[in-house]
Image (cartoon, rainbow, N blue to C red; front, side, top):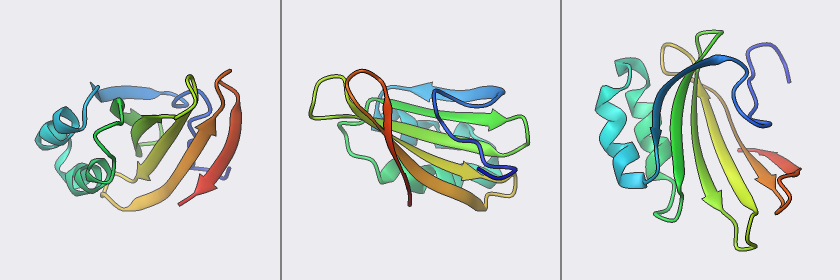
Length: 113
């Protein structure tokens, strides 16, 4: 990963939590409380998730970018897919990707979106 890219791989690389929720509807409802410049990015990202997703968050990273994240529990118990959108302070998308984890919590795949 290059400078400015912050992958999940177990969480953010430093930063401050701005929002954490457990449903799509609460995540969409929280958008107006986020910094104005990233509201559109967060709304479109959260809208793309299904109602089965169970963890939603927005973090401000130490480099000033924002990490918008949502998790989709897998069909195999314990597995999951974690979707990330990294947005700069002006609201421009820096990176969108997905991490897939097996039931033991091991990262098995990263896919750029």
